[in-house]
Structure formats: C-alpha cells, structure tokens
Image (cartoon, rainbow over all chains, first blue to last red; front, side):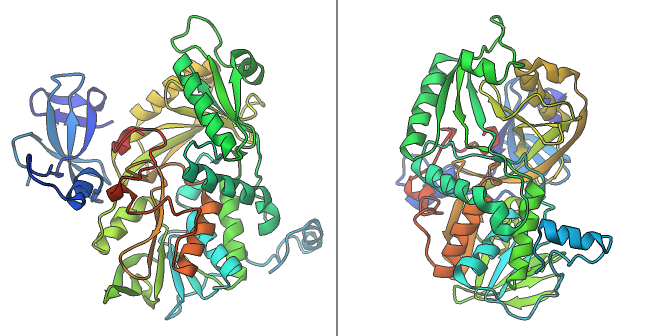
Length: 89
Length: 418
C-alpha cells in the first residue's frame, strides 16, 4: 500500500487517489502550428525511467486536486509531492 | 540431442535417470555472432529457434540477464487465444494458434497445450452487441467464435452467480472454443533446448551494459561478460525495453507497468476453460493441478518492481467473488508480479528501427504469452530478411506518428487503465 502525501490534505492511503501518468510531458504551445513529430512526442512517447519518476496523481476521493509526485519506480518510495504550479527538482 | 520418448524414458530408468543430457549448454560468449538476441524469455528463445530453423542462421547468441524462464514467460497466466477484432491482431494470433497446435511435436517437448476454450462474459445488451460484432470479425478471419446466451453459459459454468438481483447479471458471452492454456515453463524450455541443439548459444547471467553504434549501424553489444561484435541485434526484453532504449537514446511509445496474478490452493475440477468477467477486469482458469489461476488489473502506476501491492489483489478478487462466490472460501497459495511493456494502443511492436541492424520486439502489454510462437516466427523473419513479414507489418513503430493505431480496446493512451 502506498501512502501519498497530498499537498492539500496530508498523508492518505493510495486508495483515495487515481494515477495520471508522466508529469514532465509538456503540451506543444497553443495556437501555433505543431508538427506531426511534436504531436507524436507529446501524445505517445514516454521515457518511463527505472528510478525516480515525476508523475501526476489525482486525489479523486478527497479534495479532487491534481498534483505532482516524485516516486521511485523500483522501490515505490515517494520522495516529494508538490502542487501543480510548483517544480520538483 | 537426445530425443525425448517413451523409449528414452525406459532406457534412462535403468541408469536411475542420472545420465540424461543437459537440455541446453551453458557456453561463454564468443567474440562475434551473426545475430544477438537480447532477452532469454519466450519471445527471445522462439526468435532464436525460428532463426535457426526457418532461416538457417545458427551463429546466434541469446543474452539473458537472469535465467531462462525467470521473467514473464514464467509469470503469466498461460492463456492462449486469438479472439481479436482487428485484422492485424487476429491474423497474427491465429497464425500463432496453428503453431501452438503442433508445438509439442515440433519441439519434442510436452508443452501441455490444452484447447479448453475461453468465454468473455457480457453483462449488458450493449456488451452483447459489441461481442456479436467482434465475433463476426473473428469469423471473417477464420477464427472460431460462438455467441452464447445466458442459458448456454449456465450449462458451461453453473458455479457462477446466476441470481437475478446481482449488480452485474450475466447476459451471455463470446466464446472461442479453440483457445486454451499451456504449461508456460515447458514452452521456454522446449524452445531453448531446440535452439541450443541447432547451435544457438544461450548465455545466462549476462547483463547488457551498452551498445556499440557507429555510422547509424549496430556494431556490437557491451555486456557484463565482455563485448560482443554483431551486425544485428533483436531486442526482446519486455518490461526492460525502456531501460535499454534509453541506452540507445530512443524514446518509445511504451510505459513499464506492474501486473500481478495469483493462484489459490488446489481444488477438485470446477472450471474447464478460461472465463473473463465483463464488468470488471478479472480472468480465471483452473490449472491441471487444480489451482484457480487468476489475474486482472495492472497496479496502475509506472513500476519496475516485480512485486505488487495488496490493494490491487483485493480489487481484482472483489470482481472475482462477484462472479464466482465460491472463491471467497479458497485460500490463496501465492501471488506474484511481473513488469509489462505497455504500448500506447495496447498492441505490440515488431519492427526495424532507424538504427541499421537494430530490431524491436516489444509492447506486448500483458498478452505476450499467447504470441510467443507467432512473435518469434515473424521477428526471426524480420531480422533474417531485414524486412517485416505481412503478418507483422501492422505492428510498425511509426503507426503512432502516422495515426494507424491498433487500439483493440479503445482505451487511448492511458496505459495504466488497460
């Protein structure tokens, strides 16, 4: 069982959250011409690192906020959580 | 190679079974090979076997970080089926069904292929319509599909919950009677033994540390047991695909996720085929030993841990008990996990890459076991001829950029919910 520290509500069980995937993927800029290659990168290509991974989680059975989590994909240890407008270095 | 038969069994009985040949050798890596297959799982072993058998390329090494049969080939729930709607998936896997049917004879190894059938249950009218459509597509591709109503299902699995007041009553289902199961370890061992007998080197405990690429061409592979020169590399590493792709500076439409499965204590025969629950993600079959073999959802977040968490097991078995209430009184014998190369459309990739001599076999999601023979056969063709076969041309790497997705379940790119 993961325990995730929601930046708004504090430490809660994994069962309250939904996963949202890689948080480092950036959408191509709005209202600009986007090449097929850039769309492909944004929509489909993922690094999926073995080790530290910054990802999105949704506190769906709680405050319903999205936030970022830095987690180890081998040990499942959670290092940091942050609000969407905060950076995880 | 010693042929396995009733006569060799009797003969070896006189020497107390102490004089059997090793099933495969344990060689040290040579300096150079024509083809190096990375990953000694089902797909890698089958690829090497078909390279030697169909294309007469025998100067081949299989490099395996752990041991033969220790990865997903020994961790799956052994289901074999070809009940796909899309042509590319259906033809590819139906080709594989024919290889499964002859596998024990061809490999001289009893893989215990048992075509006991699969039933996908439906729990609404809409689901019945969707299954009728899929069944029709399957039949157009020559695959046996039978749409069953509630009463027909009841005759096959009377122990399921057929009461009227359940949350998800059984409306009917889609059956593929020719689907089945096989003994997964035997598949790995059978392919390994035959490949080895034709001259393939199976090198275990040998981790890939890097690649030698120059001028856009593969020159060799660096391993924990020394550098190996080769012009062709086939990557069959399932859940480690992203890790090796990073060493090659390639980013793939794949995420690595964790899937668990479990078996109960053995009980008397109660279920003769494979059954999937249509209102949740749960599938079940009974092994020849009597254990109920069960699986379902991914753990739901990127992971390389080959072990899972209990909330997922609880969630999967909640669906299981809704379908088969008797499961609640069984004890679990064991649970385990494996790491899956989840592609962005749920279908695999068997293709060449922009690096000359690098061939990719990945994206099996959690359906790789059934495709072991067809994947090995087509991947061997792709490597030997340096071009894809018509059976795997739909599994191209650039289908994502081009928009030719094979999204069988219509789930989109959220790999963790598939």
